[in-house]
Length: 283
Length: 285
Image 1 (cartoon, rainbow over the protein chains, first blue to last red):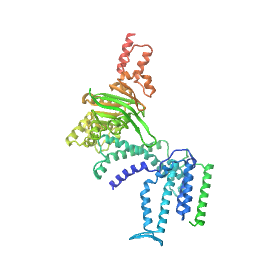
Image 2: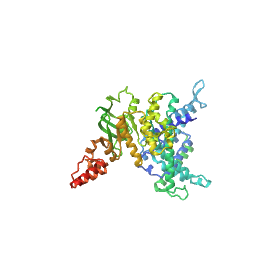
Image 3: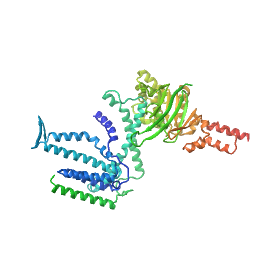
């Protein structure tokens, strides 16, 4: 079990470096300026809409809508596509499954257990399109919204849960602290790794057991330093009289501006178009 | 005097190909003589730490060559592990790298990585602990229960146990109280005088540099801007202040007095020398 955790951490450290979700792209644009609640709701609606379409014209609408927003956001297209890299394997795998094992009437190709049907191709295309738009849609949100804005918005949108005794503020605070600490811990790992390399440590050669063992001189100092930082932070928060969410005001309160209402209106138009296409366009 | 390490036209650029490239070092040419005590000073971000990491091969220079003991460390068949044994690097806050269950085991980590026989490992680590003044009763305790100064000394012992010929220390006194600082500086002086280890000390304290270093290297924005004996370097008070550094406080006093017409030589740089010179001058006038 311990070994699995260790290798997962190693994998995690490598993955955080090239995953796009959670990476903010700094620039000035209308999309960046939108209220983060609008962006979260719009992203949710967009993702739900992807699963409502049952024909290709729907996906053309989704693609056009998405491209317009990308254009407005001024985020280079290659940054958005980068988000697809980590799920490439999953994408190909689900596409292949759908293609090969969908039963249907119009059989195009048959060899043993493999049956390719017209329905299968259609299902595969839908599945792949849904996954792709889902990932790039949500990475567009995280590229144009800072993690702090996101947690703020989530806290605001979920505030009704307070009535059923869910500590929404505390959870949001924990989330933003965790996000804030990711780059710090990566930097710390890098530092400790170098310090141990300077003492002749070797992380690259040897079999898997040996390599996992060689992680210990990194992990123990890392855990110690994470605990130390957490302690310092708790003390600092305490000494500034942090007492949880009750009665706490915001430095940047979330407030809808006129452009946010326009964005909601555009979103409404999108939903109307979606219903029209679903009801009246046959293919 | 033989040259232990030599840098030729070394440049280092961070983050090549990421879009935010940053030149950390520009055309560094340096010769480090065996047995020298060098003070490396510079403002935050001047490239001191990067330079330190190049010396034991943790970072690879973008361009330029580095020679240790006359051999190019970028040769394909060069043994990096032996380089890391010969060039010890003590990072900032080295106590953050402690991880073993006991002080002794932690100090043994370095020599064990060098593949030495057990007896040699034990001997080296015991000697290293003695060098930094860790008493026998602390050898078998957990490093995490020690005081800040003790942890720091144990961590330094962890590097010393590899018996480096050249020791690079990145602000080893940061965050210690005066007693702790004194202890570390005395250890360094002993290492140089008794063990004949070449030392490169990165520090912000000009007082310490004045007292201990034979030669000062001043860096600014990735370049070596001044280089020479402390008493020569500290004449450039204005230049040093321009790049965010200064001179020892006692040197400042002497410069002030000289401006007023006092006849005191530039050559006194430590507090004691300065006090003596001022006393002599006062007796004369």
